[in-house]
Length: 420
Image (tube, rainbow, N blue to C red; front, side):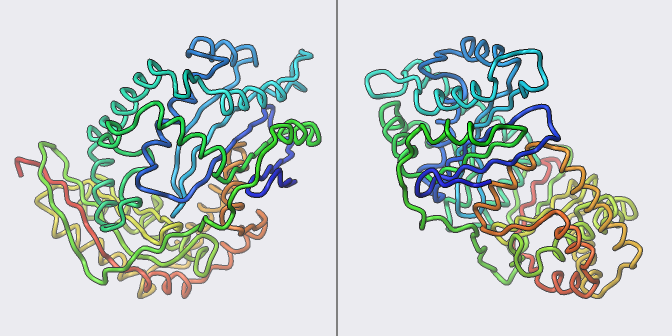
């Protein structure tokens, strides 16, 4: 059930008797802007750890314990040209407990307190808390460089979206922005978030829909712009391969490749692209896994992934740095093989079965329902579970080959070992 609480503010209630918990997500969505990304990440740090009603983590933990161990978290994410700031709480359903406490109502009130009563003094975020969270966010971002595969993936992303700063940096921002953010300006920006961001509230579980709706209506949301968000960002195809190389002191080299693939979520070729990706590098049955890693022993790992909100495919491989050219060639051979239909019907059937099993397993997760509701609202594209399964089953080898023909290798980032 969907209720529009104001222009640009939507409540979606997914009633389910499958789970013994209820989950509530409040998602603030705005156009992705380079100068706002780090600010939004810092806001989630502040909201996750304090508020006027829960001024420190001890008080916050005590409030969650009183809701029978409810789980609360906040974070940021990117989908194409949009950036989301999200708060979520999962609370036991009181219907399955020996209690008269209205836990779902308490969880809603908790979220509303966090969002609308932040820890503020003199029209700015509490300075001590702000300073602490700046340090924490800086440490968190810097720790990424210790993960060499993640570092290589980020460097590839920078190359893929050269000249598009908002798409280049991670959804959680960069440390260089932190020095220019202060507690007063950030609080003023947060007020704009509350007033202008599109808001999606998702409630999943065995809940009283009328009661949930009334509690969110009581907030008194105001109208906000609804014509500023687009669901997709179309990557610009270079039409050629450009590789950046870097050396560091590491034992295993990283080769990350970025491809233009103009296929978008639930659009033309989408379901065939899901099958194609699993066949190319997205599963243990894939050509990258079986031929590059297992048969040729040219990679410690090799896999592919799709980003159907930006129209790209990425490959990541851990390799012996001296075998760079061999790996690049054999990866291209696997793509060429799919273009030519060099795969069996039996393998394709196994690939489809794997996709279906993963999809059906995901339905056991309460969060799956919530996230799907958010994506459906962003894209305005919905489909039933049965239709999804039928679409996958209906994919033909010719459709998979057609997707492979759309793939163009654009960028590479090669992180080699200093001693090689």
